[in-house]
Amino acid sequence: MSEHPRIPRDGTDTGAGEALRRLLAEPTISIPDAARLLGIGRSTVYAAVKSGEVPAIRVGHRVRIPSTWIREALRVDDEPDIGTR
Image (cartoon, rainbow, N blue to C red; front, side, top):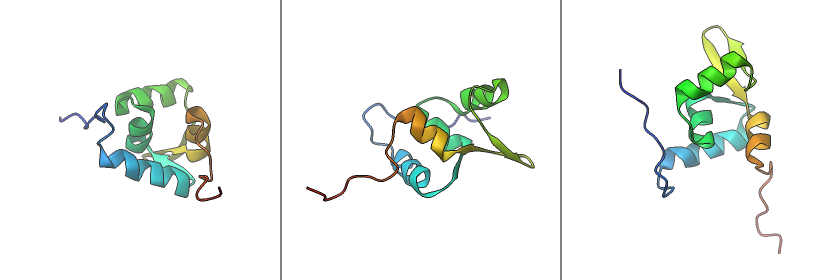
């Protein structure tokens, strides 16, 4: 069983950029995306969901995290301030 790739501390992971895009565009995100954005492992996110520390929506075998919860936890604005100077 291979472990998921971790985000390098220098911020060079392009997966994190895609995860951030999905966070801002979609109502829920996957466990791997949540792990990338929070800087923790997938198993840690699953454990936090199981303990109730992280809210989740379960549909069948899928587990999704509400984007609003991640945005609030990371204090990410819903609408980036682009070119309003």
